Amino acid sequence: MVFIFGGDIVHIPDGYLGPQTYGIMLGIMVPLWVKVSRVLNKTLKMSQVPLIALGAAFSFVIMMFNVPIPGGTTGHAVGGVLLAILIGPWATLLVITIVLVIQAIIFGDGGITAIGANCFNMAFILPFVGYYVYKLISRNSPLNSKRRIIAAGIGGYIGLNVAALFAGIELGLQPLISHSSKGVPLYSPYPLSITVPAMLGEHLLLFGWIEAIVTMAAFAYLLRANLIKEWEYA
Amino acid sequence: MRRLWKVIILLIILSPLGIIIPYFLRAGSAWGEWGPEKVKELIGYIPTGLEKLSSLGRPLLPDYNFKGWEEKPLIHQSFSYIVSGFIGVSIVVGITFLIGKVFSRR
Image 1 (tube, chains in turn cyan, yellow):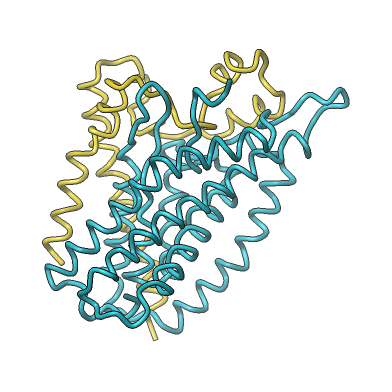
Image 2 (image 1 turned 45 degrees about the horizontal axis):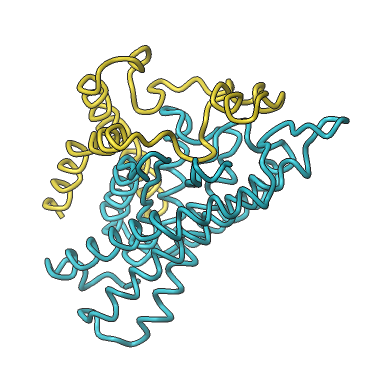
């Protein structure tokens, strides 16, 4: 019965994850954030700062474009794989973390307690999975080749879907972990058998394609405008 | 680079499409992003922990909308959506610049 509401993305709000889960997810993110600061401290050049700021702006604004499933729910692209190709996966982790924190605090989009989980799904899993898929497929093909653009699209599609899968698992674990003595769920009430198909279903069918199209369109545009030549991660 | 910033501004101005199209296609909120009332509608009760935590945030612009504008016509909401876009983009760009400057100083 829940499928009529479909299954969307990964801005988990406050109240859907219990303390064990959001605590653990935050615990996973902290060392990753430390690692980001180490990596960027070593590698980031002053001249790259405007580019990562542009990436932050792009990710924020692209998430405002909710795409509907008629009569169902909405979802949106994240742009994480595009950013990872342009500025590298670690800088992307930083940028999307900043976006998610601002969305949670100022716009109530995604929970404050869920920030660890949302960052894990969208700032870590999505760009890293998508980026390495892109790398694997594009190999040594020339920068301006179709293969590279398609590789970027496949990276976006797979990255977003794996992120959605994780969100589905995090939500679906809640009734198992957190329930009252009578077995009534305290947080997200739906079991894994509903959350995973719901989350994954909509992303496989629609939102993954949106991410893929956004990634490919932006990547092709940047290539054609000769703006991507010197970017070392592509 | 300047051209790309113009693209961002264009996207902010077009961003109300992200609420207008879902409105006309009768799409609700994202799966698993329902407020407590909607959860009650779906399953018949509000899980106690969910109820407690869900009122935790005090967002300045809830759902990219001015406070109290939830019931306003779509044209008003589109305006507040654009304003929210400019505010949000400015903040994330500002923070990214600051952090980027710190990391790139050697």
